[in-house]
Length: 261
Image 1: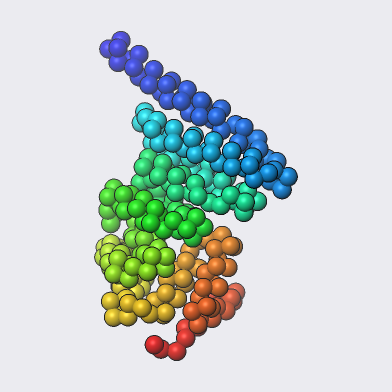
Image 2 (image 1 turned 30 degrees about the vertical axis):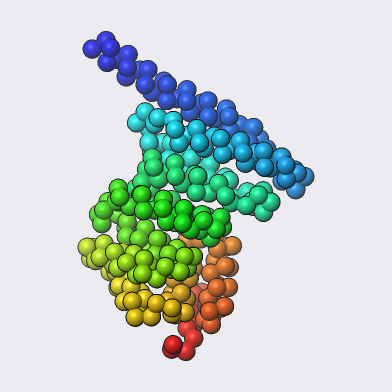
């Protein structure tokens, strides 16, 4: 009993010390982020990125001591800080984005909101859709139609990446079909709407693998997600480039599709 009680005390203590150590490693980066990036040279920013990469690699190897969700949330906050620093990202890019999500979704694969951020940052900004899909596929192994709620969205994010960024129509068709299957288990309006639209997209892709209409529909899904202004502008631009038209109204976005293919 004495041994167990000591172990119960030592384990969280070691975990806290590890987190404290990583926090101290991160502190210089936090201080730098408080300064304007306009006066910081690219060399300095690259050194910061390299230091952050080392920190993330350490976190990948560090045992969680049962604090999986705590670590996931903490790293996700670090990602939000990294992604939101637009001045620095304009100079160095977003190449660390998937590194954050490897940790976040390894520690908490049921962190649903993280999958949307992964798709946006890794596929759209970092230009690494393969990494994004790889991380999603690993996380999906820990999900089911019922856990967490609305887990069918992950299949939709995966299908969007496969269709828009890899051009893999067959894989996208299968992802949307699975999203429809998972969503159909629920009777609420949102789930039934997702099931119907995902099923329709899957069938359409099977019949029209090179369809611009299907691509526009996928960009509409991106547009309707809770995304940042830059992603929203990219989605509208892509829709219009494909021949569609977006009209913003107080009731929401109205999409006009080109003539039937």
